[in-house]
Image (cartoon, rainbow, N blue to C red):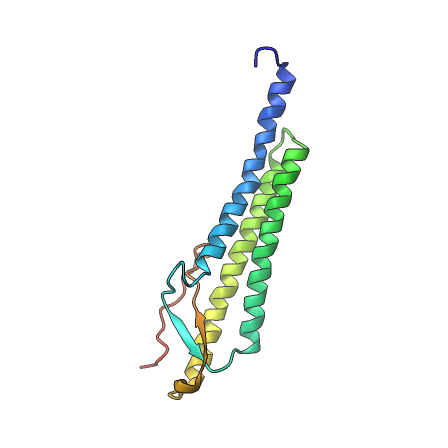
Length: 154
């Protein structure tokens, strides 16, 4: 470092801003991990005879939100490496957008658990013929935890 000019040393420090959006990838990994029923046992699940269209749409939107968060994090990290800047606004913006998308995915899963609960209550007692199940996501990124509701009412 002695022979390196001061401007060269500063550019090395500025290149470390890529850790900010890259940490969004760690959050994306946690979001994928919480949705794997084999990795994190679901606190509850609902047996459904047929998946409602709104539940399919919410599940697809949650998956697309997670994929978009991954793309934003990778783009932010690559951009921070290629064009280092003194200002941290751009890497912090990429991280904020990625975390916002992950919170949105958990909120969609929260809404999906309510839809699955209502669909399971409509099934009634003939659950022997039902084949699909909806596992409730723990919601690590959302400030509301899923309600603990049993499939079989009082």
